[in-house]
Length: 295
Image 1: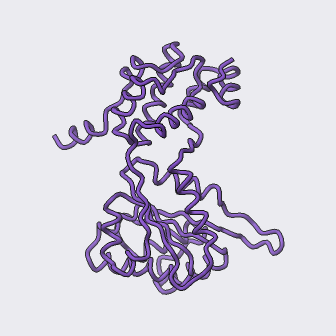
Image 2 (image 1 turned 90 degrees about the vertical axis):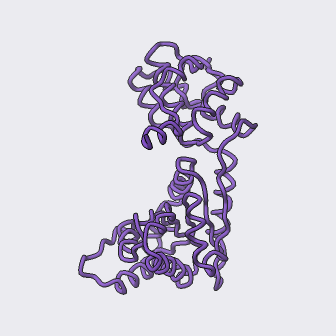
């Protein structure tokens, strides 16, 4: 019966080859969880916020590989651009971009323009790029600008940091739309370097996972999409603890461990994930990876 699977995964298990099931394991569908739902609600509130002089902004903080980018990308997908039938105008309610590797105003405008399919010429002046960004975002009725990897600001000189943060402040003021920034805890330090800007950003922290009821719900959600012929019972304490310890409590690592374990379970014919399978996969703990590089 395979009642532990959702309908789509059950059909895949029943009708697909081993290679197709392995490919499915490599392409997890979105796994929703309470923290992500709460962030989505906050983003919806910001998107529908009336225009005021000082728009509220959000700073999403979390360690690397703990879900920040996945949440922002998923929200962007749910609010993708479309063509309005009445006037054939392209409407782009949510724009997701990544901050440049270092705080550079010109590169930042280029990234926005590229994401709007409006590339710029190398000879175009910064003022012209800025005006085109403003014009296009207004024309496309963008409600939220999301800037990922904002901690990259700290890669530049103090002068460049100040200039880049002023650009963010300028866009928020001119467009009267919320700005959502995301990054590691260094992102908080980056925003704090500008007192005026720091007052406008509400911090939202994505903590590491712990072995609580939310973690067990997450494992149950994963089990529904793992294309295996037998139930793994991932919430069993020893298995749940093993996954959590190996992942360092980071959702990206949890996902990778389950992906590799699922593939190994299919290839070996075991068709379920247990501690033996988890301990057999080619996976190095995040803390050990760092130690290997440092030594």
